[in-house]
Every structure is written in C-alpha cells, then in structure tokens.
Image 1 (cartoon, rainbow, N blue to C red):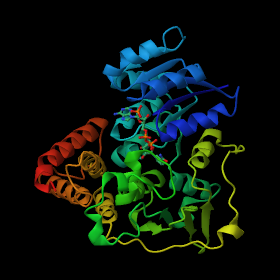
Image 2 (spheres, helix red, strand yellow; image 1 turned 90 degrees about the vertical axis):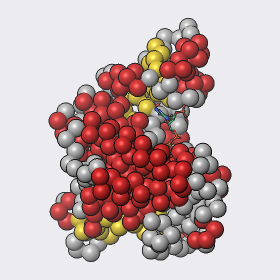
Image 3 (cartoon, protein in one colour; image 1 turned 180 degrees about the vertical axis):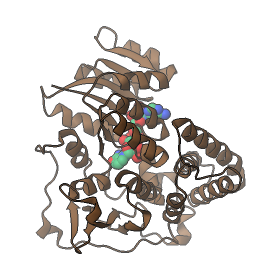
Length: 390
Ligand code: NDP
C-alpha cells in the first residue's frame, strides 16, 4: 500500500484526489489530510479514509475538529506549524492542493523527506520555483505537475530531449469574460467572475481564470518547472478546453495533449505515475466535437499576461511579489473593495513600486526572502487599495 497525504483535501483538487483514491481500495493508506474552515468535510474524509492525522489550518477550528473526530483513531492538529509537521510524516506521495502561498511550506517539508510531490499549488512554483526544484534535487524527491496544462506538457515530453523543444504552448479557456466587451469588464461582479464556462474549480482560481491571472501564473509556472526561457512559452485561447497544451519540437512537430476538462485526468496521471490506470473521465468523441477553436490572446483586454512576462524577465523575488499582489487584489475584489479591472492595476502598481524601491528581482537565496517579499507586496497592496476603491 502506498502511503499518501492530501493537503487542501477539502478543496476542489483535494476532493477529486480522494475520489480517485477511494476508487482503488487497498492501494493507498492515507497518512495526513488537511483543510481550512470546512471542518465538517475534513472530519468526514478523515473517517472515510481512516487518516492517521487531520489538520486544520486555523487554530480556532481545532475544537470542532477534535469533537468531530472523537473516538476515532485519527489525531487532530491545527495551524501552520502543524501542517508542516504533518507533511514531514513518512509518505510515498503527497498532494499539494492548498490554495495560495500558504501551500508553499507543507510542500517544501514533503520534499525534504524525499517524497513525491504532486503539485497543484501553482503558487509554490511562481513564488519559489528555483528553491523548490533545488530542494527536490537535494533530497532525491520528484515533483509531478498537476495543473492540467503542465501535466499535459509533462506527458508530451515523455522520452523527449528538452534540447529539442522549440516552444511550449499552453491553452487558455479565456474564462468567464472571454466574450465580454472591454467596457463591460469594469462592472463585472464577484458572482459573474466565479463561474467558469468549462472547469469546476475553487472560487479563487475561477476568478483568476476570468482575469487571466491564472494563465499568467501558469506562464511563470512553465518557465520555472520546465526551465524554459520565457520566449519559448506561448499561450493561445482555446474556448473548448479540450487541448490542454502543446509542445513544439525543432523538427516542426507539435505534440498536443487532449482530454475532457476534468482535473481527475491530471491528478490521476500524477497519482498513478509512472503507470497509467483507468480513470473515470469522459472519453472524447472527436467526430461529435467536429472542430476546435483557437485564437490569439488579447493582451489589451488581459494585461495580466504582460505582467507575467515582466515578472519572468525580472525573475528572483519578482514571482513572490506578483503572486502576493495578485492574492491581495483578489481578496479586495472578493471583498467588493475594488472592481474587476482594478485587480490588474493594483498588481501593476505594487510591482512598479517594488521595482523602484525594493530591489525587485533579486535572486532567491532562501525561503525567508520569499516570505519577506510576499509580506512587503501585501502591505503595499493594502496601502494602495483605498485609491482604487470603486
Ligand atoms: P479550493 O479553494 O477549492 O480549495 C483550497 C483548499 O485549501 C481547501 O482545502 C481549503 O480549506 C484550503 N485552504 C484555504 N486557505 C488555506 C490556508 N490559508 N491554509 C491552509 N489551507 C487553506 O482550491 P482548488 O482546489 O481549486 O485549488 C487548490 C490549488 O490547486 C490552487 O493552488 C489552485 O491554483 C490549484 N489548481 C486548481 C485547479 C482546479 O481545478 N481546482 C486546477 C489547477 C490548479 P477549506 O476549504 O476547508 O477552508
């Protein structure tokens, strides 16, 4: 039995991961499960999978979790340090699916044990890519990408020589507002931005898809994970979300990865790697689909893509600032403090302030630099929000 842990178990990726684990009884033993405020679901999952330990990220949720798991053999714990301790427990495979920069520390801890890390938490690569890869190398650990585009690239690269890769093209659905006129975008509401045309995902990544910050994060993720120069990374709008990514080789060949928009594809690939197992996902009927649409992304409508390119060019601490400013902007939009388009303005303002006065782009020497940059960017964003209020 493979020992597995799922961080962010109560979220969209976590629930899908546990769905796949449940479908193979006897194959996996669940070590740690983590959640945030959804204590009821976390307790249900811990009972169902007989987890060794269940951890909530929030101290104030601990009494409820303890009560819900009383009489079971499952240990309970709470807080950031407890998440890291749980990630240090011996496991063969760890899913990193906490949302936001909070996912970085547990993933790092798992790698320090030489564990295989299935990485959905894209913020880890955006904020600390070089440190994460170095930690994996140091401990002989493997990182398997779970973001669907990066899983697709990873699969297209099996058996290939990276030196033969000319370009990587990641597809973008275009999110909720891909067909909205530009002038209407400024009035987009949180509810409108929280609905994705193709994918069922957590609220934060769904809004990031509508603003294209999700694709922006994925460009940076591609650079960090595959070690590609930014000019070899492209994005294309593909509203059907059936092609997840393409890899172009120096002989002109393009290898595309297709599949239904169901995260269990990418999660299952990482869970079963290096084998492939049956997955409960829809099989594409290409004749029925008939045609696929592709078009160039509009960087005027979606300046997040340009900001990602500027962030990649700076490197070092820039990714941590970009992500933190983006998270703060998203919080402010969800809290109805700022409008939809002001999210990009805010991120741009934070990055330019940090470039001017905070030496943005310094090479990352350690995780503390990531946390300091993150804190500075969030503080600056909080200061700037009042001037962007709608
Ligand atoms: P969700 O919002 O659905 O779930 C997030 C999970 O993280 C929940 O378990 C939540 O707990 C927990 N959590 C929230 N805040 C904290 C915190 N501060 N500390 C610790 N745990 C916390 O997110 P998704 O599943 O959609 O996304 C997870 C990650 O995977 C993100 O990084 C996302 O970008 C990435 N990803 C997601 C995809 C998807 O299809 N959903 C696709 C590709 C990548 P609770 O709900 O109990 O409060």
